[in-house]
Image (tube, rainbow, N blue to C red; front, top):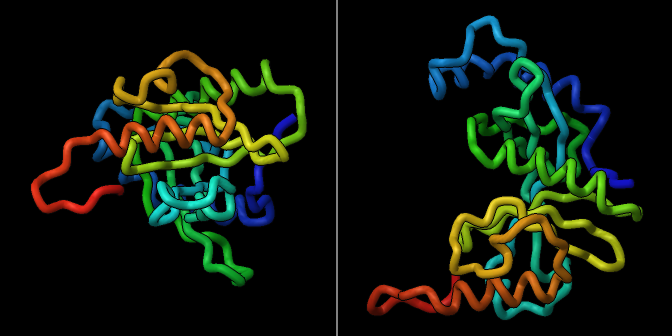
Length: 194
């Protein structure tokens, strides 16, 4: 069974904000019917790699930081869009929807959720992990094992992470990401690392 660390008491507020911003989706994809039903789907906390993560101790607290929430958006019942929101730390206010868009990653996230529901039978907190320097999106199953399930890994140079759904230990995943980043060509005079 997986859980997310979403803020259920704020989901109505987030859905209201999405309703106010839904018109932006029509500009991104004119094929969307203006009368399409738009619903808030699953919500995950969104995490990213901290600056200097390549040299950091391989613990989640040293590697990752929470940067808000990812919201799946269903259009006519199908996962087709997303929104990102930011929460003001320490505030009782609802997170503020800062971005809304359409991405192929949405369907990949939905497929990964299905895979996790079928194959992972332990308690964990499901977090979405974004590593922009490696163009990588993954689910982090936060528990004592801290396993990672790559979701969207478009660069084949990331090797095994590109394949079908498979869980990796945190250190295996980070080793693959670090190897990839260390082997990227750098422009003359550029510092190494992301």
